[in-house]
Length: 150
Image 1 (spheres, one colour):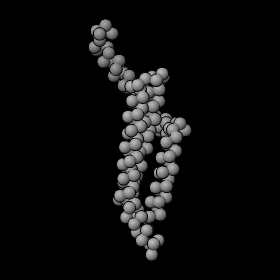
Image 2 (cartoon, rainbow, N blue to C red):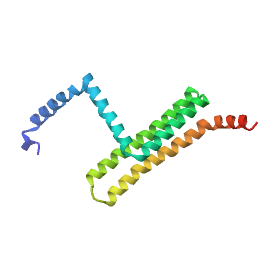
Image 3 (cartoon, rainbow, N blue to C red):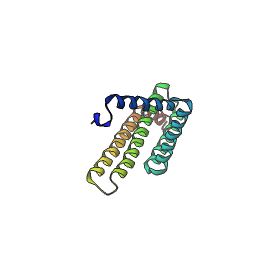
Image 4 (cartoon, helix red, strand yellow):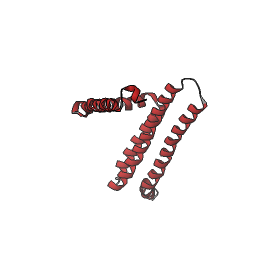
């Protein structure tokens, strides 16, 4: 098949040339353009996904409560990691939903399963973040409860 396309050497040269053309994307302006595309993707997720708004609200509450509790740097690392995992799972779920809709505009059982699995990944991440939140905030809530009930 490669021979029919003009031989291995020609295909190799063409592939290398295509790679060199892609090197232009490594410029500063190319990086800025990539960041703009990424921000546009986040904006699309926030505009199209109801659950992203729930994650936004939960993230804001956790950040406010973390400041109020005076979390240590170590505790903040866990909170930030948990939030990033949930946001990443939500972004990937959104991408899978869009891709599934393109690949299977009509209902298909396998497309539905793919969407369910992606949504399940978000649920796993969210449950994990709640567990981390309880482990981090538990001692602070215990202390706060003791102060309030005295």
